[in-house]
Image 1: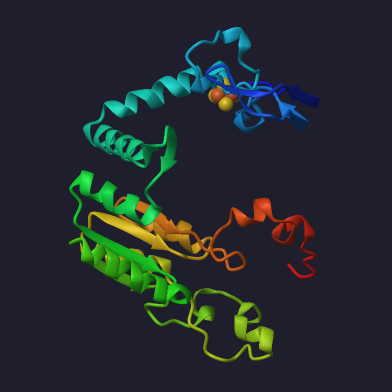
Image 2: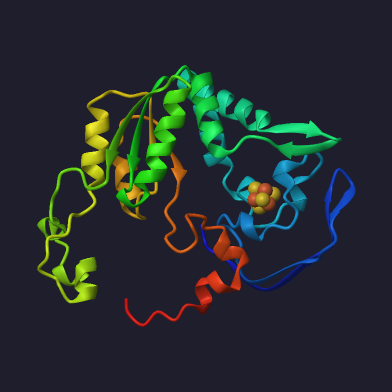
Length: 261
Ligand code: SF4
């Protein structure tokens, strides 16, 4: 399909939920809008979450407008029993994350508890934790919590396998020790494939990522044979809370002057 572009500014009025004003702000989106590729983030209407819309209201980049066949094919995948069980239980756990307190919808379950509750609903009792050595104390605490509710927990640290980073082709100038002028010092590399395979060998119900590095987490997931979720995403600067960069000028990537690649 030919790609079409539209450059401009899109201004919407107040966001509304069930006809009520929710945020007293005007949404202004600017930049290049590509018209027939998915660009949901640039959509102001959010029609996919509503019940009363017409196709003519959808923006040109809306997948519901130009990806009909893909969506239909995807929908058919929920007919698989396993997919349906996972989907239904996730959606129930999503609802149970809230309570109505003093007339308001309040979130009541931190992610650690949601993982426990989800495993419970799925009937999963044997879980494996692939963790970063830099978060060993947090990983230990997570294991304590999981074991305290009766889960059988296995854990593998990122350095398991004990290889120097150069063994699988990392140039020695990219060792952390080289920042101190010691590129020849042994430096154990992370080993996400070993983490995945060790956990795979135990045939577990669920694998949980705790703070693996970007890229290593992808490789772990690729090689993981059990359903895999992330409990802690690594962010060395923000206390493992990547959202902080979105809200704080001190952490905003735009203000970081990176001199080296
Ligand atoms: S699916 Fe369509 S209506 Fe929903 S956010 Fe994306 S562009 Fe907007």
